[in-house]
Length: 203
Ligand code: GLN
Image 1: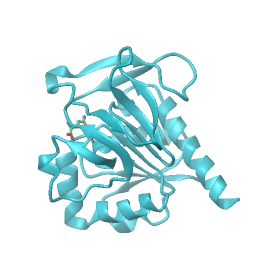
Image 2 (image 1 turned 180 degrees about the vertical axis):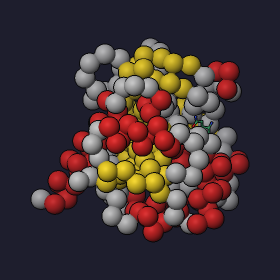
Image 3 (image 1 turned 45 degrees about the vertical axis):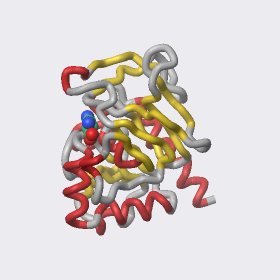
């Protein structure tokens, strides 16, 4: 059975666990590097990237996750999780001196839609998802302001607006919080992506 670890230091942890469990995968909370042994993929939830990076630094979690993600472990980052996966962060001064995960060839701009009051929901067309537009919840969300050549843009806000969902091979990231909706399609997309990648490794 596919086992997905959810980094459980801070933020929207239980919502990711509930959604993944409903999709039939085995879920494990990750607070220390040793818990990464044997997981097929990892989710980095939304919350506060600085708080997460500080908590992770105490146990060396992101150094280890960074090595594993660099070696092909699939990771899905949502909101703060996208920031932690980004190779470059704007307005990231409070992250300086703390390890993040990295690997995703994007520049993320933190709080790019404004503060807490600028939180909003928008129905988005997301490449790779069938059916109606996806109800995306944005909370002090980052924007992806640059993408490298290997990065596929999956969604933008508005008409040709800022990039808010990307994939680079085994790394998936959204500026918004798919775990705060009742719509499991992005989590299902990730589970299928993970299962597809492990089938390819096994072949
Ligand atoms: N603004 C937050 C940060 O910089 C992210 C917000 C969120 O995850 N909802 O980490």
